[in-house]
Length: 99
Ligand code: SF4
Image 1: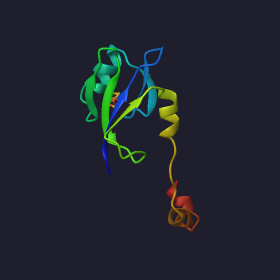
Image 2: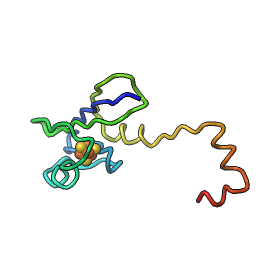
Image 3: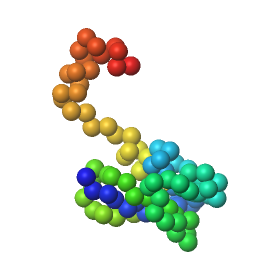
């Protein structure tokens, strides 16, 4: 899988999608200090307030993408591709234990 540099541009409310927290967050000093500082995905902070984050992304084979809409990005990352084998296992007698 490819490591992809995601350049998360801030929207008009200074929000970005944060992969670590899996949510749209305000890209302010608190977020940078509490989460980006020490995050293994952190790459850079841009002068415009955007944050570059590097993580494996199955959606593309490019090495760098620009994320302009944090809410669309959040929605995209909620998708879970389910294989036929997995659904068959989950419907078996132990399905209730999978919780
Ligand atoms: S560097 Fe980590 S904590 Fe900061 S926005 Fe990216 S994923 Fe989130």
